[in-house]
Image 1 (cartoon, protein in one colour):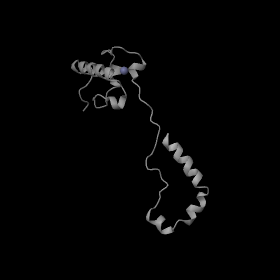
Image 2: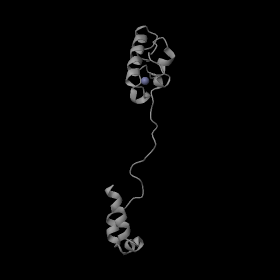
Image 3: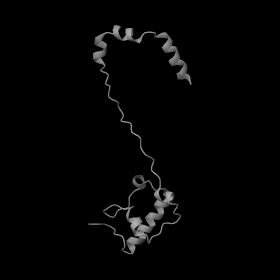
Image 4: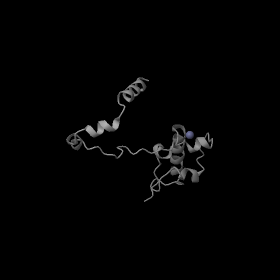
Length: 112
Ligand SMILES: [Zn+2]
């Protein structure tokens, strides 16, 4: 809100910006090199959504090994929520289902 008024004031006080840049001494510009490159690479990150919430799964079936395998790494580790985007509720259920399957030896503890 306050910025808006400042920008309008500065625009009115500086009628010719080209003249101000020309009058600036070259020594000052050399000491402070201005890079045209953007400091932070901005990119649109897609918001991760819980796959199971989208499919409207209320309870994770431990017998669905194919689905559970998609939540594990090749090494057998359970993929983190950060990677898969699973919600806390479903991640807990996936973890429990994977642990159950590991105990039943239908899923590996480790793939060595
Ligand atoms: Zn979910």
